Length: 558
Ligand SMILES: *[C@@H]1O[C@H](CO)[C@@H](O)[C@H](O)[C@H]1NC(C)=O
Ligand SMILES: *[C@@H]1O[C@H](CO)[C@@H](O)[C@H](O)[C@H]1NC(C)=O
Ligand SMILES: *[C@@H]1O[C@H](CO)[C@@H](O)[C@H](O)[C@H]1NC(C)=O
Image 1: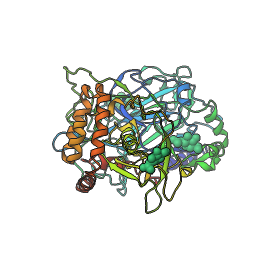
Image 2: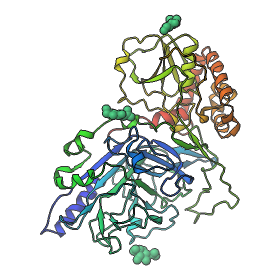
Image 3: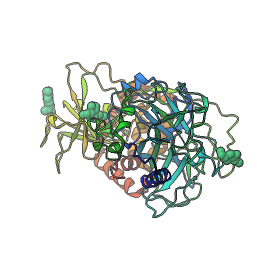
């Protein structure tokens, strides 16, 4: 583990420095799966569609542009420290298939380390100013220079393989317990700028290594905390050279990079430094007094704030994509990147909120009673399930409670059985994406967990739910996809890239009601088909629902 590497490094540093030995704080913030996966990079391309897809964690306020104040006022964070409203992101990983298409490889969890690395115990560690942001790594790098701290700072660890070395390029074997992509940020700052192009406001130390308290360059004399990312990607695939491809198109691994936007309360981080060894806690944040009151374990339940934006394109959420999103032909093993000169950017942002029909509201996450179900009056399953679809189904049968579960299931009732609405608990992991919505747009329960909606008003659903544009897939494709799980992949992805589909929202949602009602008679066939398709594709590469289910089982162990 990196922990031991860092520890041995700090032992080395302190033994070199025997006169003055001390222990500085270091702690690890843990994150659930991604908040948003989209072609957005507010640091490099603020307000615009970025060049490649990123996997983003942190504050729910994340948008194509935002301020420190926006970050701080987000409704939640993916972090296990509720006052950490920073955002952190890296490129999204893909897997090139033998048919030349690309499967999205979900980031399943991430750790963000905060470490104090300095030359002496009296060296000031400066607080990040509000608005501070930085990047590390280079998205077009094609070489590895063993003497360059910037290159050393980007690495991989192959988990589940005994003694696998830390490597600068993708490991040359499969990693049964995840591929861990790692980036260590510079810890020397010019003391003036929140950002400079190319992240020139920050620099690595001049001596002792990229992750050390070595002397800062005279141009960047101010020490800041060291930040280090570990992003975990599922990698239990048979090893195929060149199959791992970053969203940049790089199949070697040198283009890994990372972005950070600061989002802690002012002066909080510098307040930790005087705690010294007490706050050198690794993952055990409860032992660090300033952090302890802010620990939560519901980061995986954090969803983007209402009105968040994603790029309206198929990134591979519902099955393989023929090309990497953006102008990203594969490069790396074949040499430097050669972008398509005729590429025209056609993607744009769509505002995505999970609206629900008028008169209904979301109550939260409810665990199914052991061995039975909370809502027993009616149920349906759909490969294009959304909260709206489920609510409309339950409303059409006269019920006042609707619950979505396991991405595709819908349950209705007027009362709960063997549990009660007072057991609703948003710390539970209702974090499985709705099959009928783009990945980040919303969540439809979890494993044995219902996201519950209730009819609250007397208002008849007059202004039929404004469905998120991304969910407006024509009902014909829903019918097709539910009839045959084989075709669902291609039909769904086609539908989501058709701009027509998103303009026919009201029509689509009206017909969705019809198709979902009639689908109740198909239920048993459908479930059987879904089950068999899941069984067939246990590699998690082909079936969208399998992939979604697998990656959302948050593993708390490290
Ligand atoms: C490798 O990095 C070192 C340290 O930054 C630098 O001095 C050297 O010029 C680099 N070599 C190449 C070939 O870029
Ligand atoms: C997690 O729990 C905290 C504390 O109870 C709460 O403030 C926060 O809103 C919760 N987050 C989510 C995503 O439910
Ligand atoms: C459910 O309750 C509503 C009143 O809230 C009632 O109008 C409706 O008939 C009930 N439905 C069933 C199926 O019992």
